Image (cartoon, rainbow over the protein chains, first blue to last red):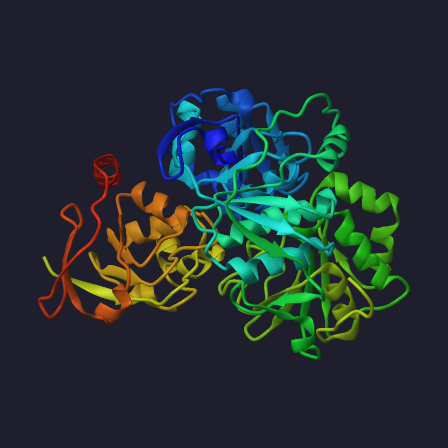
Length: 393
Length: 154
């Protein structure tokens, strides 16, 4: 029996193969690096390309405004039809009916592993690789070893992801993570986990499609048979569960401890959002905590839903109003403060608690970043210090 | 030719190698960001043909190629690390930079050591004259690196 990567990519583990891609994702953050190399070049199939403006969204410098303008022109020149501007974070956009089970999707971004939540083999690439992919519709890949990650107890997507990072650290580098979901997590949690799998270095990270996938895709009018090559043969197996809320301490996402170990530490900023955890499940939990309360005067709370679709749902459910009443600043749907590009940076010495995927030094300005689930984030925004919610996860 | 080693530790991420706030197509801004997240001011002390030496998992996290671009602009065309993230490996290859894997390199090299490296031969001569060997690159990777080095030098 062969592994999922062997079936999808062909060849055997450690072989170099040339593989065609089914779809490509471009975003304004990295695509400016390819404009020059793509001059005069045709895209192998422009219908298979999605272009998203989410990083410089809206742009904060004239140079970046120029990138967005140039991307618009690029899309026009190359015949790309699917251009999505200021409507959501690229990975969320791709998971809203674009990336499909069994497809190989090349993204110009490291969190492209997220498409694994819907059963797609999402792989991130740098700019030069993306140029070759756009020209030829294929690239070289090393067939990765598979590690099964078995989820044995229900918890939030963030806590399960943090537990995974604590266990695997960077040893997912070059590997394929195949999730074995024993508890039937919802799609929001699966997206958080497959997104943050990028932090292990994994090439791709897939939840083999099941009823949850089918039901989710039907929301986008996708139905019928879901083609997917089954499960992998026996391989390394890691079990994850989270008994209590966890937190990643600066400056590594795998630097994970129990929230209780840092309770009481003061914070300056809280950010709920990003492609890792800016979805309805995350926003509902935050709104539940914040309903009828006010955030601490020394804390600024920034919230950014991961897509317009999510923003609309949150408006319909009254979540946005509750958050604003509690003192939150609602940012437009975008990468927002997470990559430290267009808004929400920290001054030297400040601390931010966030639902995002990365807490590396140099990210989000000069401060220190702590990662936790949205409920811990919301409660901590009220208390002004890192706080542990009562009761079960 | 002997070249100066600039040594970093384990798990140096792309956000440290090139913080997102230095993302630009302006070459001066790109260079200023090089290693700014781990050694502020590095761009002022780096010299053409310095060799970056690092520990495990060099370049984890983001796949932003601006990191490899900044190295290239600074005149770096060799990085020796115990291991590379898959993004950093590919971005180096695509920018004509040799991503040389060498288990335990940090035990052999200190900041400022002068090294002689022959990437195609898989051979390295340390400051004290000790000769070490590393696994050679497959020919098609060597071709890619050389092709990309020429392309970038144009």
